[in-house]
Length: 516
Image (tube, rainbow, N blue to C red; front, side, top):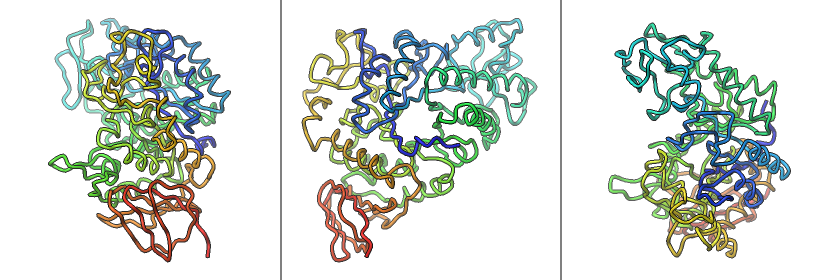
């Protein structure tokens, strides 16, 4: 069962500690999200994904959970979260929380019990070898830091022990098959966490490292079986709840695991990379949306089309402008390039995700790592609301801020962008308004390539009764095009006359088809 609301959904990703601080402690909070719901809706985003907000020691910015059923005190309370759900629903908006099912913090009560020498009900909640001297090859593990005689497997950082969903292929006596009662208990515990927040008003989950559950699961068949079981629970008990996976493999995530959505992430060498991130050995941009015009749209299509075609009848691919793990688009693009890139992303099929601050052109900065962010830290700086103190993020003194705000005189803010009709912010609003008005531009799988040639511009594609032409390069281009249409939305200048499409440099044009 596919929640119908996803067809017209546009998500806004919020990194809560950097969004809006209402209590002056220098850290964003849940009440800050609630206060800014009207702003998010004004963008055309009718849904929100909030990065981890559960109780945590924040060794990995909240992806190290120590209580799945408690909002971290620095963000507020469970009641604050429930109020946020309620206020969002009053506005016709939905909220997904970030579920981290593969691991917890090493301070989680389950792990504190599991690491004890004496056997107890949580002894097998995590994956332990049978001896502290047995450090298994092929796995990240920790040993010698607990009273229990064994090594425990890790999913990511040293403070994030893997929860035990078992093994598909058993290669050692300490491994349990994923169908064993102890492993099934882990799955059922995570379903209980999901029910807790769905009952509180949550509308679903973004699932972190969705492929990481079962070990020795080379084709992810056992992991997919677990997610199908979860989806059966949702279809039965919460049919309007949605799940989006951090997987970037739609066949496994959507078809085999039955997620409703799967992110199309920036992985080196894939289609997303070729659109926005690719560079040559000399660092020069080779991405299709760079104004340098040295990209190849076929690299994207050869990667994307098989993924789209294999999953389009079962779920949605989700394009992102950026996320909390990747550099912002502005690291390599100016605002004119971003306008065209975002217009493309927001008119593709599937369910798009806009990262907070991308709509005003916030910058990526090289910063000292905070809470396990490392190179990702520079994408997590405070939202820039006004021209006032701390750019409107917080009334705290600067040294108390979670991360420094953009100190440049030219730092973009919502306040300034709203005054300029042609700003990046207002461009995003115009495109999303069209997406909501025109059903052909929503998640529906109606994508067709009209014109795409290797090393050539423009790229032209159809969405139902509309077709869209994109020329991100800085040079004027012209192609034969038999399509007839009237312009609906343009950036730059384009003309369609006498079977010829002419586009000036850095242009985007949407046409409504006219039948002869």
